Length: 72
Image: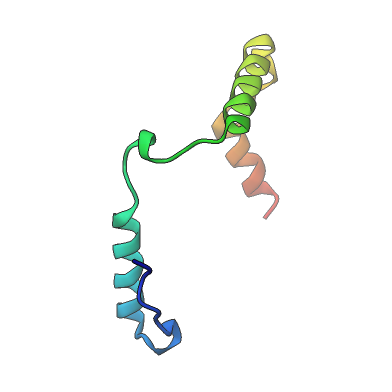
Protein backbone atom coordinates (compact mmCIF):
# COMPACT_ATOMS: atom_id res chain seq x y z
CA UNK A 1 0.00 0.00 0.00
CA UNK A 2 1.59 3.32 -1.05
CA UNK A 3 1.86 6.07 1.57
CA UNK A 4 -0.77 8.75 1.57
CA UNK A 5 0.24 11.70 -0.53
CA UNK A 6 0.94 14.70 1.71
CA UNK A 7 1.54 18.32 0.75
CA UNK A 8 4.53 18.81 3.04
CA UNK A 9 4.43 22.58 2.60
CA UNK A 10 1.00 22.61 4.26
CA UNK A 11 2.30 20.92 7.42
CA UNK A 12 3.50 22.92 10.40
CA UNK A 13 7.12 22.56 11.48
CA UNK A 14 6.16 20.33 14.45
CA UNK A 15 4.11 18.15 12.10
CA UNK A 16 7.04 17.86 9.69
CA UNK A 17 9.39 16.93 12.52
CA UNK A 18 6.90 14.30 13.66
CA UNK A 19 6.73 12.93 10.12
CA UNK A 20 10.55 12.76 9.95
CA UNK A 21 10.66 10.92 13.28
CA UNK A 22 8.00 8.46 12.17
CA UNK A 23 9.82 7.74 8.91
CA UNK A 24 13.15 7.36 10.73
CA UNK A 25 11.60 4.98 13.27
CA UNK A 26 10.20 2.85 10.44
CA UNK A 27 13.69 2.06 9.09
CA UNK A 28 14.90 -1.35 10.27
CA UNK A 29 17.71 -1.42 12.84
CA UNK A 30 19.30 -4.63 11.65
CA UNK A 31 21.97 -4.86 8.99
CA UNK A 32 20.24 -7.92 7.56
CA UNK A 33 17.18 -5.82 6.71
CA UNK A 34 19.26 -3.31 4.76
CA UNK A 35 20.85 -4.75 1.64
CA UNK A 36 24.46 -3.76 1.00
CA UNK A 37 25.53 -3.81 -2.65
CA UNK A 38 28.46 -6.07 -3.50
CA UNK A 39 30.50 -3.11 -4.73
CA UNK A 40 30.22 -1.52 -1.26
CA UNK A 41 31.65 -4.67 0.31
CA UNK A 42 34.44 -4.79 -2.26
CA UNK A 43 35.30 -1.15 -1.63
CA UNK A 44 35.40 -1.71 2.14
CA UNK A 45 37.65 -4.73 1.66
CA UNK A 46 39.93 -2.70 -0.65
CA UNK A 47 40.19 0.15 1.85
CA UNK A 48 40.85 -2.21 4.77
CA UNK A 49 43.59 -3.94 2.79
CA UNK A 50 45.14 -0.56 1.89
CA UNK A 51 45.04 0.52 5.54
CA UNK A 52 46.63 -2.76 6.66
CA UNK A 53 49.34 -2.46 4.00
CA UNK A 54 50.29 1.10 5.00
CA UNK A 55 49.07 1.96 8.52
CA UNK A 56 51.33 5.03 8.67
CA UNK A 57 49.36 6.72 5.89
CA UNK A 58 46.40 7.37 8.18
CA UNK A 59 45.92 10.54 10.21
CA UNK A 60 44.68 10.65 13.78
CA UNK A 61 41.14 11.99 14.09
CA UNK A 62 42.30 14.83 16.34
CA UNK A 63 44.78 15.94 13.65
CA UNK A 64 42.10 15.89 10.98
CA UNK A 65 39.73 17.97 13.14
CA UNK A 66 42.47 20.49 13.92
CA UNK A 67 43.40 20.82 10.24
CA UNK A 68 39.77 21.33 9.23
CA UNK A 69 39.18 23.90 11.97
CA UNK A 70 42.25 25.89 10.93
CA UNK A 71 40.77 26.28 7.42
CA UNK A 72 37.64 28.06 8.64
